[in-house]
Amino acid sequence: MTEKLIDTFTSRVGKAEIAVLMPIHNEAETIEKTATEFYDVINPRMPAELVLSEDGSTDDTENVINRLSEKIPLKAILSTSRKGYAGGIKDGLKLVKAKYVLITDSDGQQDPKDFWKLWKLRKNYDIVSGWRKERADALYRKVMSKIFQLRVKRAFNLPNLMDITAPFKLMKTDLAREIAEKCKYMSESFWNEFTVRAHVGGLSIEEIPVAHRLRADKSATRVYKPWKIPKIALAQLTALSKLKLELRME
Ligand SMILES: Nc1nc2c(ncn2[C@@H]2O[C@H](COP(=O)(O)OP(=O)(O)O)[C@@H](O)[C@H]2O)c(=O)[nH]1
Ligand SMILES: [Mg+2]
Image (cartoon, rainbow, N blue to C red; front, side, top):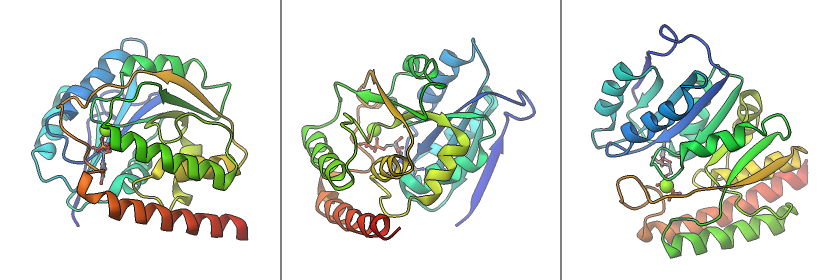
């Protein structure tokens, strides 16, 4: 695996209170638009440390990020081998210097304007999470997600959260790092494991309704391809058992 770091942020901006971290895999069509949209929405009011965590892309993503780093200040980690969603987030968090981090998908499904709704509440809760009230995903994807979230909620006695896996979460960076480092079973269902560990650790979680849009390139999910569903479902159930076992043993 070869890894490359880009940093046009530190010399041009230096410091920021908020970082926006995006995991990226094969997003050549979307990443420029998504990152620029976040930059344009947050930057007029305060500097934002954009951190792009890319791995394993086989399209033009790397070149797009290289070019983008000349246009807007950002940090990026680019890796030739795929780390999975969880791996991308964990490695991206290592680059973050800001006190708070918004972790959001890079495919344009989240609306950057919703950031301000979460930001207002950052001091009231440990984690502020965007609830996709009207989720713009394929039906099979929504059903699968709902069923697994219900199982997770039941298994760990979680409060009645509406959208555990919402990929739009704001929290202190130290906290994000601490919980993410513990997550080891659910790579693709990362937010399920993350939320369970946060709950077990006694953290407060608040959900705020946010918009959810079609992918910016109108393509399908990078992770939950229909033909991968049986394998993913099995992996999720195995991971759930392992997590149960670990947390019961503590
Ligand atoms: N770094 C990294 N990001 C990934 C990986 N797989 C998916 N992503 C990113 O994670 C986000 C969610 O993926 P997506 O396919 O949209 O999943 P869905 O929205 O849950 O259906 C997107 O921004 C992807 O680019 C991966 O292996 N590594
Ligand atoms: Mg998506």
